[in-house]
Length: 206
Image 1 (tube, rainbow, N blue to C red):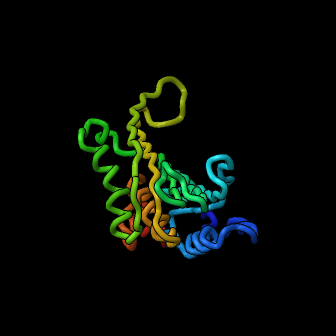
Image 2 (cartoon, rainbow, N blue to C red; image 1 turned 90 degrees about the vertical axis):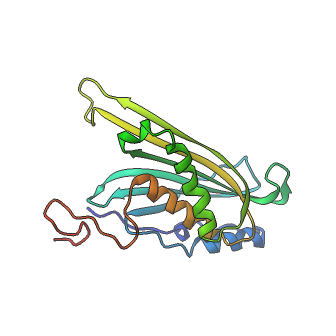
């Protein structure tokens, strides 16, 4: 069964007294249209990290099986109208990605650097003006035993990152982050369709 596609504007709107800059940032987020395999939905935002916050959860479905989740993530916006010394700004974006990846990647010494470049390159390519970016890339190899219904060997990658956004055009920042999530999930470039087992495009309905 196909999952319902949602956008960041499905979230509860901010209170009327929210700062104009924060409201403008959320309005920009609402213009983002994720690719078909991606579901974006509002989730509770952390309340103690900043005076104003907003968060969305993201799930990526397998292009060949929409009921199968192959990656997930969170995108959080923290806003302090007074500015935050550690952020060197008023708006901090926080992203988290978790995805199962190719088991051969665990032996690639450059994989962490490549995965981190997905974020830094995407922010630049989408014109998301930012600074003070930092985070981690973690690879975990697992071997399952006994009756656990899952592949015997698997490798998971986690990317945790945060950066300070300039301006209110957070649509560019979320779009860049969705690209990172797609890369981690191994999705083909937009417009390229994988073939299902019957030789038809995965989304053809055939």
